[in-house]
Length: 278
Length: 348
Image (cartoon, rainbow over all chains, first blue to last red; front, side):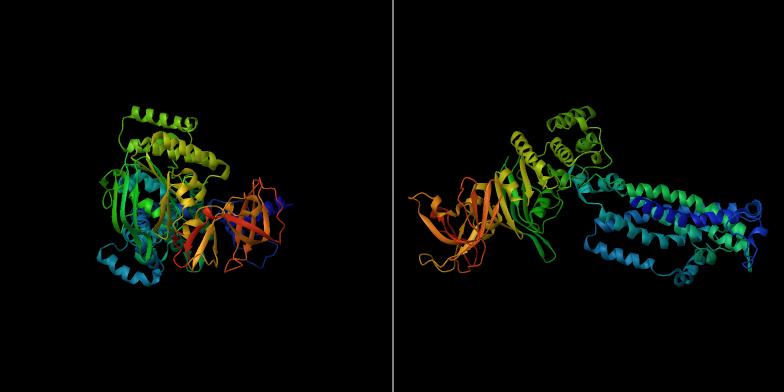
């Protein structure tokens, strides 16, 4: 009986989580005639193919817009931002958690607060900065601006993560013959791996969905990221190209879902398990 | 091989005086136990010896060499075992034990020999290829000891190494540890809050409370001749009974202390024994197999409802009915006197 309830609940959640993907999938391959029927026709069943599926929306997305170009742009920005974020936030989080003592906590809070300032407040000063550096309408602007969101949060995340990793192992290494620097370079990274993965996933997701800054700083279509280009190109006035929009959403969300799953598994597994206590 | 000298050592964390002026001299080759409840400063003291914590003031010498200040942990010739064992999770048992040797850049062959020798000593050779998470608590603890051993340290520092083992394992582990220490004769500082462990392991015990050393002595000295009421009640299970007795032969404000196992029915003692008798009203009797604990109060006390405990060995079959008052007694030679105001021992 308990099992039935458990599986029932699991099934419910699976349907809940999977439904958006299903909706994207069928919308992306439905003929327009099947899509735009209006809410008044009650005999029409919306969640199945009433007409044979078509590749017309996917063709529109791939050959009549700059979608492949946007994907490439997004990847460039994502990789750059993730690298910058990890390079700055991991050492910062480590030193705030381990080396500064009581001040570390307060500084960490201060850094976190900067994350809470909404982009709508910041994009005016940022646009001054971007034009000063001559980065208007280039991916460089996004690579410069996005870390201002990812670094504070990631620093804070690494700090919090390190607080759950006991000091003992690093101290043990110092007793066993390592200098503090050697501990930081050789022992600590292995212990922080799950924290680093979380930072990567977080930065990745944030960059992928960011819209406001991209809209502000990018004006040429061939320099846009997916999150900006898709709505700009496929929403014309009040005409929504639902099929192509959903195809774009599907193509970006599926790799993301796969990456998420892969990382979350490793995260839960927990590298430090067995190292301390039982 | 080396002794440790500690002079007026202090460690303050803001207003908290974790270690508050400790002088201690640890002899070459002895097993010294730092005993105290949590917050007594025992772990902070150990961490200062290890170099993981910098003293606020004071001096530490290991083998005659001054190490407080800037001597890093790795240069102090120490090995430490943490309560958590702190095994490197992504290294096998072999790699864990080899870690300090690799850090010292020993040749491969020598590392291999040393690790196998140490693993043999703790009978963990079978586990060399496993990862820490695949081991039981007792096995992990032995790996941690092994790793400490291969360094050939001048001093062993052990921070509650048995605290995470289950009670059954703890006894054997204690025995193993003691035998091992006797064999290699390396100066060892052992931190624990468990007074049974302290009594069983220590050549000498240091009783600490709120950052200060209360008493240093052999287990016997600490048990039989406690210097104050804190030590008297902290060491020993159940704790020493303290009675403020209105006794004309004693100066006012004197606490009379006696161990529960000395407090027995009057009839048990021989005729020639010089006794101090009490009227003991029995509240409850606890049967524990080898012993009986009798809880009650004595009418002679100026605080008559204070709980007094008697510990009767199983050899005394006398029936002790609950709710009755009985004649109990303590041999006078087993009585200890303390100043009620300061808690300090008074030689009567």
